[in-house]
Length: 373
Image 1: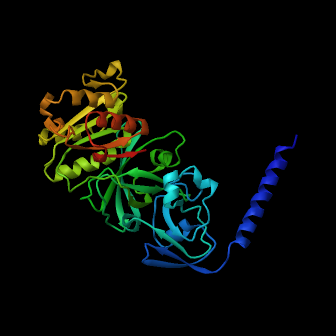
Image 2: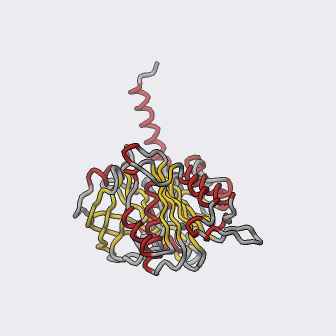
Image 3: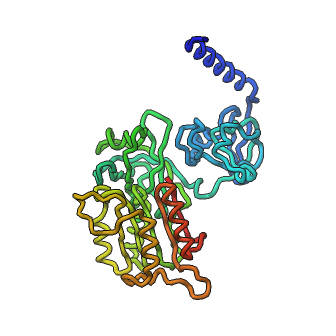
């Protein structure tokens, strides 16, 4: 049997040889990165596309620091790239592959390369802020208020997210903005402690008021459709509260002109948060209704509200379309489509179940917007 030490030594040698070969096999010299057929960035070839974008202050979602473990740094390559690598295959669907989608961290720039980026990504920036307030809103969730220093203002759409940098690393983690976009000099994040989580452990265990933080953004195509006048149904669980809170606060500032019903799922009473704020909005605006549900209430909770999975509770209310004046659910007599928009944020199983319930009862697929995390 070959000793483990020898195996490790062989792996190190192979890694070094591959790095040397990679350096000499990639043509060294000037080339261009062409973005959206308009912007041209001259570079010295030989490094991953992602590194050049960051150097030129073009920020795209990327959590792992270029290690090809997160699959977030997707770009559309129009020309100039080698064949897709095995490290990318696991993150890119067949449809995306056909469309030219690649991981920017895995595409080596060897010659002129042309890519396409959505305009909203070109507007993302790197921000430096200072922690102004930290509040424990549940036993494992903290709400962070960050005052912006440089730049000192941010523009985002209610529902979008930013990527918070983990100090001492090149890694980022994505967190939805929990504040209204009208608050331009501060952002608010709601972060759950994930066992073993790199960034959530730092935030919940080490981050303190006065600390400086770095984040990039805003990102995401999940946001309030402001041009619409349709009534709104929101479904969230856990930290999925954050983008829904951003949407609700923004609508409240505008006078809650659209009817909004917010279903929030938690295990026990200790997992509910922002309850007083949401109940206040419920009293202030007749168009807003907050419906929390517990899936595993404890005896000491003395809970007299809804019980069950949040999707079960949603279905119950859809069946009882006249209850509490929720005419928001009345279906169009001809199309049988429910005239509402749905905004969902939570774990993938919750999202999948919610989409199934909503489409079953007539909500159009194209009117369902969601963010999985």
